[in-house]
Length: 339
Image (cartoon, rainbow, N blue to C red; front, side, top):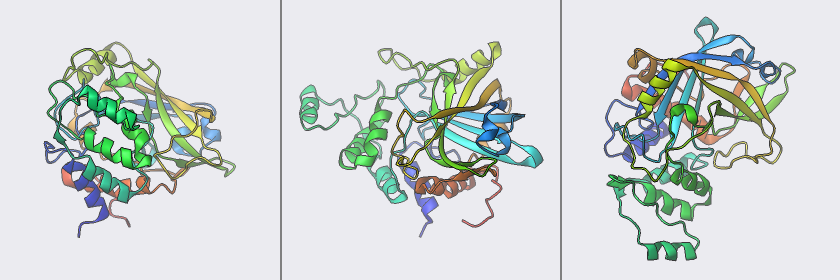
């Protein structure tokens, strides 16, 4: 019997029949860049974590497309990823993994396995206008039209699952309308899960993190034909002329917020604190060593930041390790520890 972590990875790979062995199960296509992070003056008052103390911290960031296909379909509507590693003293490090979706699809591991089964790729066809009207009259969201050149999709299965499972609706519906960014540097990336930060006075706060682009958010015009590959070239061109900057925003949860359920966004009126500025300066020359071999893990944390009781967040630790082992990535420090 495969471990739960292996079941999760296999389920994800099963959703992409053209997945290439030896690559990440999802967010397969990516590009690595380097730069630094500098915390804001107030960050240290909220967390004792080393990278929030004000010094300049080197970083590596991997931007990615969400699909598990090795084809660069940059112009397709898809979730994008931003995985950040902060390099700390004495060879320590911590990671923050975010995406252009503000919530996750399911609240539990069992639900995730069922969702992956439902979301397997099937041949796509344009739904007739009458069928769409019939769905809307039943308060069912119609199937999205296929992208030009798209032969298979998991959208219909995902939508069918969401129509019968309330917690999945927000993420599935948002993902269906997410679009394509004009640049990796012009998208907002949400870390989705709740973390617990500890302040110098030992006050503990439930928080969520968000990367906000200084250049602003911009999407490709959906009326234009999709372009397969442009995001990597656009980022290289952009960085040759100027750095790319993001603000790290931390939202502070309040009593009644969903601390352990990543399918539920928090109210927009919650307090947000600017924890620092990320400045990216160049694309990594060695994409294998400084991007593809790096094993980012959302549970790779340092004192001052801890996991919440979110079961999906906890499950990601071992699932990411299984993925790393399958593709020969660099070992995480807790790889040999208890699971």
